[in-house]
Image (cartoon, rainbow, N blue to C red; front, side):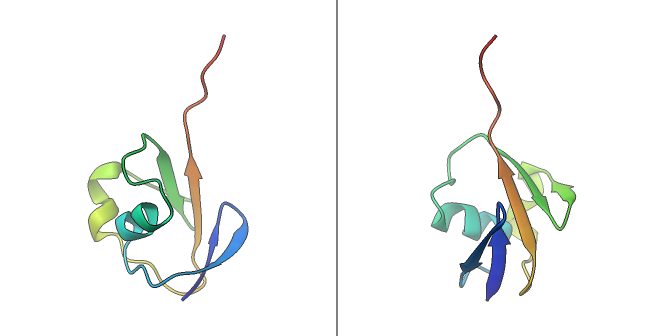
Length: 65
């Protein structure tokens, strides 16, 4: 299916947000996620379905000071 990941087009067979994160190398990372502008907590990623045309944002926490 066709998705947008952090603004870039992506073709993926992932059907859930958790599967997409794993396939794209974010599996064990501490990240924040949103689908179509709505925050998806880590506890719901495994059951959050993806649909063709969805826009997914993956954000890593910033460090520094």
